[in-house]
Image (cartoon, rainbow, N blue to C red):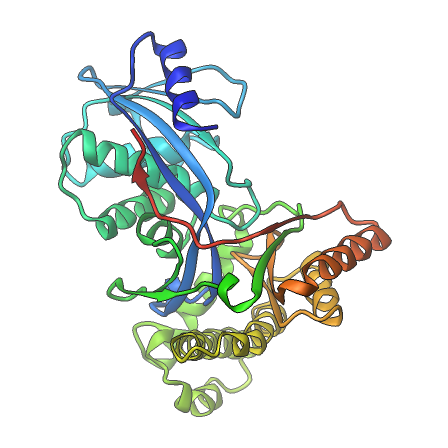
Length: 384
């Protein structure tokens, strides 16, 4: 649904023209999984799939929310009644952003919002972050709050952590807010320093496929939180602020200090080696050796499967089948326990790899996957 359709939907709902229309994308994470809440490195890029919002201000302390994708009418909320973890529906994400802005002292007095999204929900592609960021950017513009993109990402993360109750890191919101077309974003999640890394696979005869397994997940459920708590416990046992502070060259010594604490060993090993994989991928891309990131992706999947233990049979089947069919690299992407995998392939092999994965899913009795090409797209922006 384009900007004009969203604007028309707003007029039909609220009886007036919106003050503007904004969009914010979902994201694919090329490498760097479960490192963001460990102050580590990540490298996502924005998808063409976006959340789009038509928005106008109100001055009566009322927030009205509507989604073109959900048949449940207009939700009307009073800003003074917004309380963390009281809403388990989709409205928690935009309402949480308003709550976070007001809690931070910004004078937001209400809004009418009409939303739609093409980011697949539950697919590990940051559909929730896209909703948060599009609302935050719109309110930042309309209320002239003067917040920078990284500040909006921080507020959106707080909305998801505190208001929604999902213990996610900062990567998803920053990717949606800050990515640039044709680039992957090398992000240091400790200080939010960023570097845009050119990522133009088409010019090199390659493609990156996203395979949505159709296995839904939810970060607000327990397993994600358990991994985060386990990483924090590992850092405490090693006497560091975050696992980011364990250098790759010191990993063996760190693991030896953890002794027979198997869970801590696994979690620490994944995070430290994953940070090293991100830095290796950045170096390869900057040197022009894009094809060589394939084995880095495969190693990342093995670590997520065996050490972090957040894969599932469908994700493993994508990776194993794609690699057997000639892919250059493949791994799960996102929070895990379902969602999507990515496949790096030569253009000539895309059709045969896609067919192999679809046939493997059918043979296993799994729901047919959704496969599409991922092209680095622009970050959040005003459309109208």
